[in-house]
Each structure stands twice: as structure tokens, then as C-alpha cells.
Amino acid sequence: MAITCMLINAQGCSTLVAERGETHSESVSPDFTVEINATLDQKGVAKPYFHNGAVSGYDFKSSFIIPAVKGQSFGFSYNASAGIDVIETQGSNKQVKAKVQKSMPVTVVVTHPQMVSTDGQVMTESSWKDMLYMGRPNYVVWNFETDAELVSGKWTVAVFDGDRELISQNFMVRKMLPKPGKISEVCAIDEGLYPPHLVKSHTLCCSEGDAKACYDFGWKGVERLGDKAGAVLYYAKACDLGDISGCRMAGKLAKDEEEKSKWYNKGCDLNDLDSCLEVDRQLP
Image 1: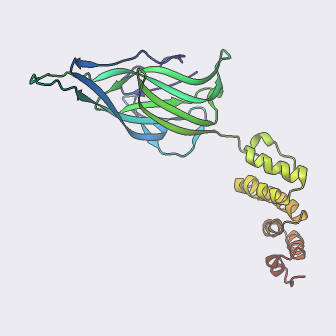
Image 2 (image 1 turned 90 degrees about the horizontal axis):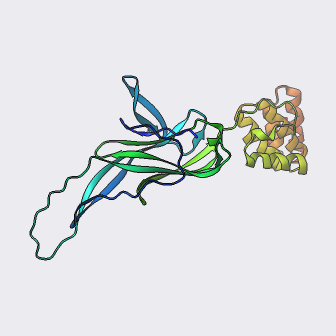
Image 3 (image 1 turned 90 degrees about the vertical axis):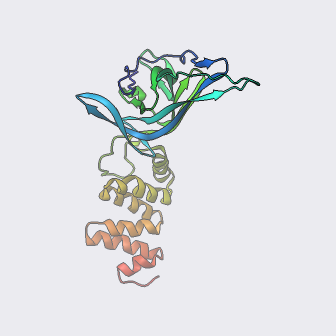
């Protein structure tokens, strides 16, 4: 499993581990404890920037959907500071000087949909050790490097100090399907190239004669991909099944006047005023 990280001038991530890191707490004195505060800076699709040939940080582009594509990275940057919690002792006027560390070990935990590792292990959580630096940007980045990592669903990336979560962010990841080719025959697609909701429309259209489903597939699954000739096939099928919108769109996208006239006349026969106007007819 390939994971990249993380912090400027810090060591790279190690291989996946099954458990989180050891609990880390920092005491200043019996009367004082240090509280680590982490705040989000940026999140989204990550693009590294370089200094003297080495990665020195990341820029992030906000995105509602993170595309699961090999070579793509995503994550967030955050800043951390240390605050001192004072436990007052009655009658005590002593002064305490606290020295706060500039860095500390943390564990990054990524919760994700099921993926299968190279040794066949099913995993829903991945983690690695890292370092947090005070007062400067920290970067937490996942890079897709293998096919096994390309899984759709909710991903949560979190940074822990022992058992205490310092910061976390949720991401919606979607595996990107190859773009389907041009359609030359109705009801003869490769369903593996379409998302489930479009496969459902296609099945309803071709197996159950659902006119609206034919129209929806032609519009959302074919025309939107730039295949107008393929879309006409499904609009025409919708029209044959009695959908006036299918007739109208088949007529609009048809390449020759004979085909245009055919579908507009059929739409007019179904009492569609717009289709009738296209062929200079009155409603039946």
C-alpha cells in the first residue's frame, strides 16, 4: 500500500501499520499541562510544490469529489499551537516557567472503504507515524499509487496525539470510470463503464420498456458525454415507447431532414404542440 506524506522537512511515511501510535502526553509541571490546538488551513486535491528539487509543501484545490486516479493526491494542511492549562493551587504564589516542544510525534489515521492489500488483507483503516511541528504548516496527504486504493466512498483523514484526535477531515472519493465509446446500437452498451444509477436507467429502458428511463439514459448517459448520434438512438426508443420529449429531442438532434420530420411527426401524433409546430401541423 503506497502512502505519501506529510510535513515539511520531515521523514516520509512508512508502510501501513495496523495500530495507532503510543499515547503521547506532555507535562510541564504538576500544576501545568500543555494543550495542543490544531486548526485547518486548506483541504482538497493536493499538488506538490518544490524547492531545490525537493517537495517543500502542497497547494490544495477545494473539490466536492476527490477523483480516485493513480497519481492523484488529496488531503489537508493545518497549523498547530500549544496552550498551557493552569491548575490553580489555593494560596500558591509560585511562578512556573514552561518550555514547550517545537515538535511532537503524532499518528495519521485514514478510515476508508474496504480495500485489499497486496497480501490479501481486507483493510478499512490505514495509519502511519509522523511529526507535528508548531507554528508552521503541517501537511497530511494521501497519494493513490495502486489499483487497490481506488475505492469510492467516504474517507476520513485524522491526526492523533495518542488516543486524542487533534484534527480530522472528511472527503468523498469517487473512482473515475473510463469514458465510454460512441454508441452505434441501442441497448448494447458495456454497463461496466457507467455508474449504477445510469445502469439502472438502461436496464429499465431495454428490459422493461420504460420510456422515461430511455430518455434519461439518452440525456444523462450519452448526450452529456458528447455522443449526440448515440443519444438519438435512445431518444428515438423513448419516442417509440410514447415519450414526447424523446420524439422532440430525436427530431432536434437528427442529422437529416427526413429523420427530423419522422420524429417530429411522431411527437405531433402524441399531441406534442412543439413537435407539430416543427412540421407545420396542427394538433390531432
